[in-house]
Length: 200
Image 1 (cartoon, rainbow, N blue to C red):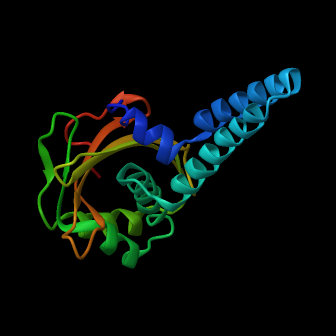
Image 2 (image 1 turned 180 degrees about the vertical axis):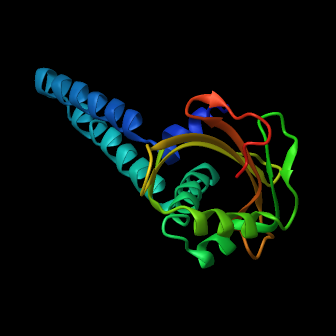
């Protein structure tokens, strides 16, 4: 269920700036040490540069939400919207024409069948909670994205169930930049590939 890693510069400067900030801190420490040894004013001034760079990177990472970060957040929101069932959130996150497919990509639930099947299943079983683990995502420049997620589901009766999913997302128009799921691919059930016909 591994996806391609995010672009390195985008990840380091916009999503996880801590390595860049750590390098800046080390550089600042080295320049301050040299300034103490040689007492040259230029060294003291140069020591400010890494501090300013680290502050700029921290501000930029906080101000910008990448497509990948948005997909990770939306994937968490989608899982959370099923326990308890949040119809408004599902309507926001899932395209009405979304399909459900099996591990090989064959369609198990055609366009328009997902919501009625989900409601039917949740009326038959009591889902107490769901937790997400190991979310990965990638946002493609062409306006679509992918995410994978492992979900642990706890029911009122029976053991916990672990499932793995691959979600295909489509970005909205320029005026509505939201992501919506257009295909849900069920990959794993309790660590094994889902057999055909397992859809409840």
